[in-house]
Length: 257
Image (tube, helix red, strand yellow):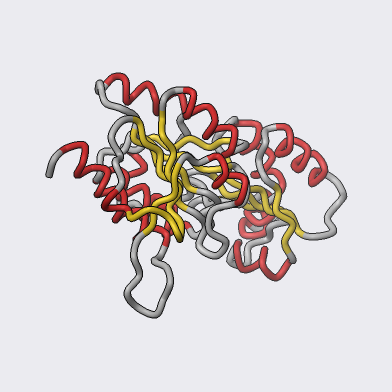
């Protein structure tokens, strides 16, 4: 067997993408943070079954994709029907975020991203969270970008300084925050003006997904809705742009700049 064939058979790692059955299996065994497992649609034989079972046990989403997409993702490497996206950084917990606020003797300031699937948007939000003094960001485990290398790049390294927690249920996480005295604001249409809102005390800002906005159940859990006026013909801003504007207002009220 040639070295090239041996490499393709054993699997390979390209940036955040781990390719091949053995490589993905060892990644899962290592305990390293994993964003997603990609499995070719229809693959149900051999170690693929073990891989998907291990992923499910760890709560890692498994995405069924066609082989053409998997080929593109792996840049033509012999993926053997499976690949995985590894995390660029370890996750924190919601408790860690609240603990940081207590350490700083500050009311909690948290950003909640409801199914932000564009990694560039999530990275930009994390970068703004760092700039505005937020204590952390919360994202859901499913239907969301995670701490991939692309997100890390878009954040310009802010993932090294901002605590990001990944939770199974955003609505439950919001309820837990409210019990800690955190007031939760949804950034959405038809709310009170962002610049006339009192953000003093513990505050969590919910930003919705690029296409669907904030989910109904998540929005129902929020205490208030805040909006940005739109003077042009487009009725909304990019998720990260809207988040940044409101984050800076929260920071202005807190730090007086």
